[in-house]
Length: 149
Image 1: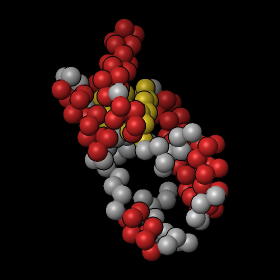
Image 2: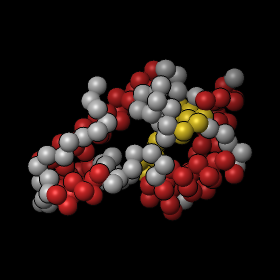
Image 3: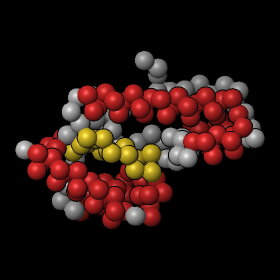
């Protein structure tokens, strides 16, 4: 298993400095969604490391794992983003890095599904623009679990 600390090779000092400042936990989008879920009476755990991918939010009672993904690092609209990256600085590094993130996300999802978990992913922009809709999606997932029991 790779370390969560990455050595940024083949990137500028400015990029390296910026990348080191990016947080992996308690991002603004995670906090925003967590507050809304808590306000709605949905209780959860944060960053459960015993589950594949350490989901950002875990509703253990209903086996729901939630990931709050940034569009850039998790490859939203990958074909369009990839073509932009090909024209930018250090394209091989960024395309490889984001491709690995996408593949890792898929592996983690598959493992979680195999363990009987419901997996939800929300894009950062989705959380910012439609927080109520995101909470409603979580509520619907909970309702599905309750109906199955």
